[in-house]
Length: 163
Image (cartoon, rainbow, N blue to C red):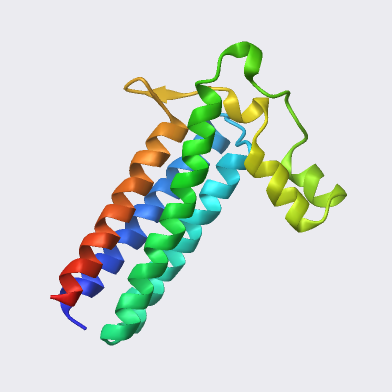
């Protein structure tokens, strides 16, 4: 494994940790309560961060490095899908926005895990609410941009590793 792989993993881990820290800052210091879709996006960032940290610390050989990079791309794609769905909900006409539903904690208590995941990923009116913007983009839109960047770097890393 080359130093560039290890630096790539460290960069990805630091990026995800910084994004998570900002999300928690918005939650605890700006009083923005995350919707179920936001929580699932956080879980994707956490998964990518843990995988990238493993790659940074373990410094696997070529095959392990390719596997870790592919996992980063996979979880980033999952997160991008969730962010894209939330962005779609945010741009629906007001009369088509789904009703607000229960929080994730309530759903975890009341439904089996797969039903909870299904209900959370469908989205509710809470997920369609835009309560914070930066440069005219919502959190979901910024999240999609960040996940797209992670996917792009993972694909680039996989393509250059094969050469």
